[in-house]
Length: 191
Image (cartoon, rainbow, N blue to C red):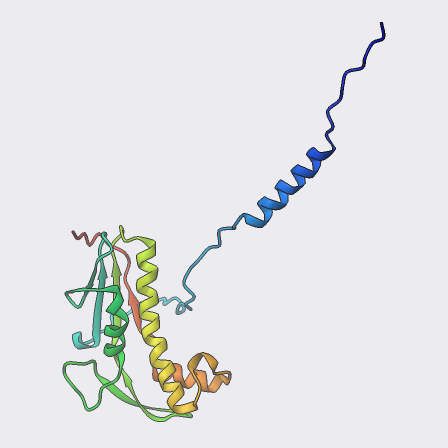
């Protein structure tokens, strides 16, 4: 009786399947990308000094551990935060005690410009979610960017983001300075 050899499994197509699976996972897998805030921090101060700011020049924004907003002591809404901040930092002339003080500054390329002395003070609770923190930062940055964009269109005919001349960008930044003061997170609490 003749002996038959053990049949072999054809593994040639297994390599093709493995290669196709590798390609599938390479194409469909997403990589986590760190997100953050693009903001240039001021240089460190060696001898901090107490700066006195009048109460009318400060817009207090608090975020508690439940991600709820308190804007100048009143419950706030993330959807209206940009408008509230924009209204606050828009310079009002003549001097109105219900708005932050303004000063006239002579800026090259712009001439005499009214600049608000308003500062937005942001304080978060340690329990504030990162998502809410980023959303609040984005809304505050949008308020400043919209004011800069409006001024740029009035003076130079193009939006702020379309400016390429460094002197024009510097002039707009001086006219609408981004004044956001951020305190260390604390246990503010909240319900």
